[in-house]
Image (cartoon, rainbow, N blue to C red; front, side, top):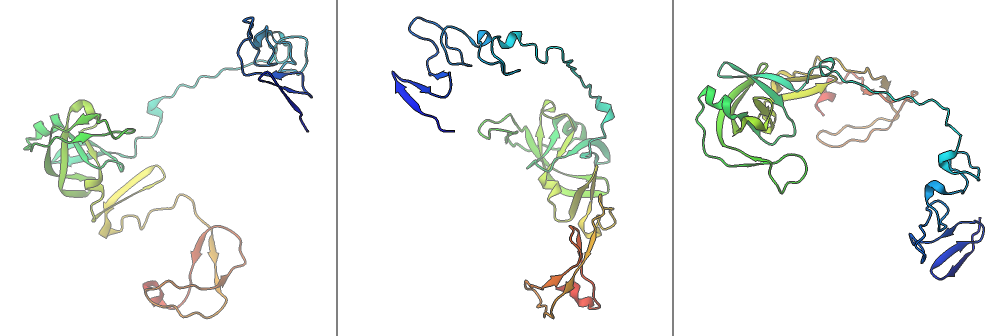
Length: 262
C-alpha cells in the first residue's frame, strides 16, 4: 500500500486514513490529544474510532460488548516448599568429627565458614579483611570477611586438605559452610550433576563410570568408506557413512585394541 504524506505546520497527514499524526499532547486551546485517533478534544477512553475489541465504530472501548460475557478465571498457585526435592547441592560436611551444614557452590570463588562455627571448633583465625561480592555490581561489596583459617573437611567420603576458608558473620549466609572453588577445584576431586542428583568422589576412582544416563541415546553405526591410516597424537579425518539419520552415540567397532590409545 502506498501512502502519500503532506507536511503542514509540523503535522503529518496520511491521505488514506482519517487519523492525523501529531506529536503534541494538546493543542493551542488546551484540548487533549487522543492517542487512538490522534485528534484533539478527547482522550482514549472516549474515542469513537473503531473499537480495538470488535472493530466497529460508534462506541468507545468502555462500552464495547464483545467479550463482556466471556468468563475469566484467575488462578493462584501455592507452592509448598516441602513438596520440592531436597537441594542437591546441600550436604553434611565433617570438620574435626563435627557435622556442619554445607552448600556446594560451583560459582563461589571462596569457601566461607560462619564465625560461630569457627569459635565452637576452636580454630585460630588469622587477620584477613576481604571484600565479599554477590550478584550484580562488583564495585560495591555486600560484606567483609572477619578473618581466615586453613582447615581440613570431608564431604561424603571425600576429604579436602589444607582448604583456605574465610570467616564471615553468621548473618551473611544460612548454612554453616559454603564450599567453593578451593575445595571443588582440587585436582583429586571430581563431581557431576546427573538429573536430580549431585555425585562427588575422588577422581582416581572414576566415580561416574557406573552412573546411569538420564536418557538412553540411540547408537549409530558408522562404516569407513575408505582405508585411512590413523596417526598417533594428531587430528585424523576419516570418511564414514551410515544408513541411519538420527542423533546419538557414535560407536567405533574393530579388533584393533590399540585404537583406544590414539
